[in-house]
Length: 384
Image (cartoon, rainbow, N blue to C red):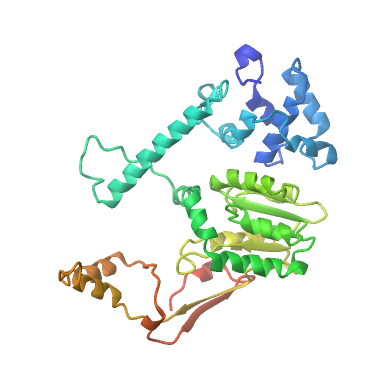
């Protein structure tokens, strides 16, 4: 199957758009079903005959007959590998002629994935060079050989791009205090998840979604707007949980969950999310959770996981830095101590460090708390 209309008289992009119901939000698995359905048709089938067959079969409906189209018809199908890019191309407003046979640097008539990988590696290398240049303060040094600054992107793009790499998810998953707390709290309370509809906001690798499925949830919907969602779908499939867990790519505030909710159960029973950042609110993810709660959670019986949060403050004696500079390989560098203090005042930002118990010099004081089932977005901006 090729997207080259001139050679094969077949246009996959227009076919997908023509068979998608106007009120249906096209997702990754929808495209997977369409591609596998096409693979299952006779090679002599025309585009119109395939379109008619798809509409007659109503493959977007969750029926037993349609479940088989979730499974690849063709082993290592290149179109399934590039499904996300294909959806981005369909949604793109770029010139159709320019994109007809090419998206994201990948030739659809050839699907040369190795060259695509090389292209991504080159982009990553350039990005690393840019980051090094920015952090060293040389971004305005008029170096004609320096890579150009990237085009301006909105804050959301930078935010979600940061979660598209494996290392950040490894850091979170190896935070055993946090991850194991979720695992135990979910698996030790199966009655709260049994046969329930669960929403995982910012699902990442899908770990909380899989905990909820293991606890007996009837259906779990995970939402994330970073590239990690592609790998999370594979993880869910590899653990035989695809029948229970559906993963959707998009911003929680923008997507419509209605097509993914049973008609008999149009509201969410449980919202799980690992939204906490440095200083609790730093990553500003809680507003997305609140948005999901207000739009989809059952107002009478729905529960949040976690359902309450609080912040504490206590004083520490920061003598570690002073001790370090007083003796550096037997040299006195204590003149640096004043510079360290000025830098901290100038940055006006938190330092994330491990603090030894003997450095704590005050009692702990709770200065803010919130019930997550009722807290409003505007209450997250406060002074104490």
